Length: 257
Image 1 (tube, helix red, strand yellow):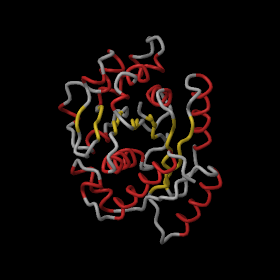
Image 2 (cartoon, helix red, strand yellow):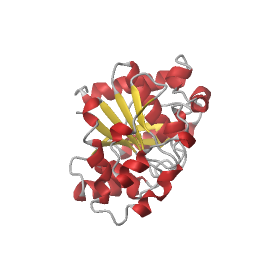
Image 3 (tube, one colour):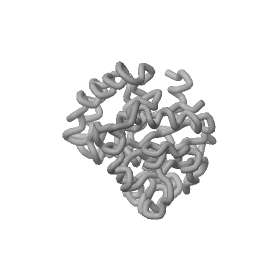
Image 4 (cartoon, helix red, strand yellow):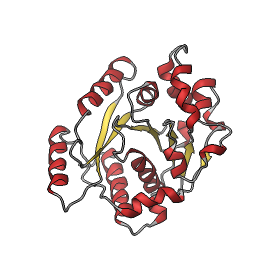
């Protein structure tokens, strides 16, 4: 059975989808089978892995709203050992359509049960909001991985984020825990980035990965080619950082200290 991890931060622009794609691709290179579930109506994880959002016959929308089996929706991606449940703008209306559904917060969990056994990891890419789609992601997961950018407002909204995680843990998913915090967009030339790292480490004691993701041009370019940075430029600093993160992620899961 896969370990199911939601990658979530209600702030936009923190490197959430970048982390989903590239951590999955790095784990795939290490021989792990990974499924990405894109539940963001923007569909950036979908297009970032080379799948045309406009040309989808089936997407996560059809699973959440109509109960279509995820096995009928899953697609291969450009990344080795990485599959995808795609998303597109159809999903934007799903929260309204799901209002009348019984156990609407658990729709994703119910559908994932039938496919998760085929993978080592399932990564859920949430929208940057605290709505029903994100709650579905959190309710379906064993843990949450939180990307935080090394910028001035890094910790803004984090207390609200933790409150939401605790609310889901109490009411819907008692297994839920914080997997870890990934620091992204780090620029070692600025005092601000260094200060943010220290502040985040104080706030999330023992939960911050030592592998930090730098600002990197190749990392920013890769999605426009439908590739992870691992496949776009394996020698880039971005690819190396996500490779390090994947190894640390596995090491900590296996009980390393």
